[in-house]
Length: 433
Image 1 (tube, rainbow, N blue to C red):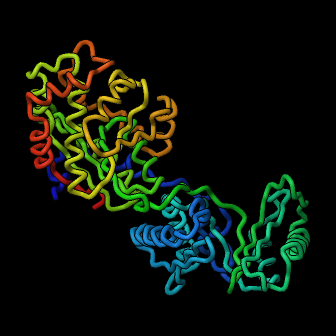
Image 2 (image 1 turned 120 degrees about the vertical axis):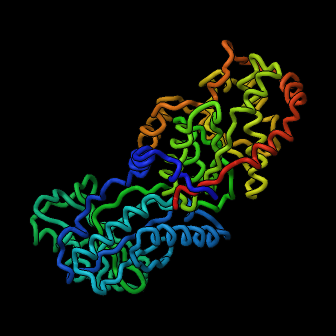
Image 3 (image 1 turned 60 degrees about the vertical axis):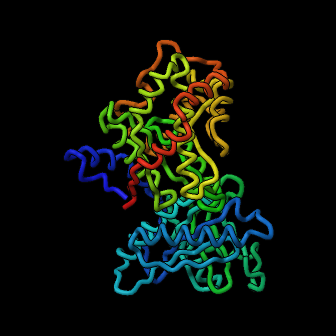
């Protein structure tokens, strides 16, 4: 494994990392904002989404999600307890040696970090209170105020033995909130919703949540190698595959020694930013410049772009075998550029045996850019660099490549042996570390 940092000029990677490490926005919620600790214990509720619909193998998904959340929590440095309660995970922070403000800040940090874990549909900062209607009502009063507007109470009993029905609990809590703040009730269009969840040992009360990423836990669907170009599309493609449960390993083809290292810095920063969704990410950098020269001198001509992309895929397949990955991922979008026409995509699929996943195949550029902006990768991807794909570019690229012609070019170069050599020369980096 190589360390990228010593080879960088001062400040070059730091600026990229600042952009790549864009954290989740704050979670506006009164739970941790100056409440009296006697009202209840601030905690985080994590709601499962798609996992909840699984059948007999649901426990496997829950175990994987549990492992991923624990790893994410560990990265915050906050000691926390994680428990599973019928499709809801509860994160608690021990109050030992923590002031109320410190405890609230720790809960906030856990909530923000958990929001980046695929498999969670909603993140709610809640108050954990005693299992009584009175304690739930006191928490509801504390979480609301004169400016909360019209409200509604939504109660749910996971413990059906609780002697008060959901409707009765709604009425009792609503009456207390009206008495305390004089707020109107609106069941259909409330400005504030008070959620009450009765569990086996306690009650959770909260007024808001934020959407999680949804999807499946990373690692549940296996492992794939992502061809990370440093452009806008491939980071978004990687994120979409993480949400479908794939653990992603990244490979970047740089134009070195014909270009500078700028594209490597970008790929490094992009992977570092995406690492918050899966943890433990690895980046392999393949110097590709001389291989491109060999393709050009072999008479690739208008097929240069497709020929070099086929060679990239072959090299990625060799790396995938080494890492027990069972698919490749690219940021291809149908018709976006000349190499992504349907005939050319067919020619690329012919290069390898592994399936090539293209999660953005039906997206247009504006959709991809919007997603990249949301992920915080767009600013890094738009930084200038010498992209290896533009090296030795023919004046006119082929849009309807024939597989037979490409195989002839590869036969002259012994593409299989060349791909093996390129994979052996790949350098490994671990941006997360």
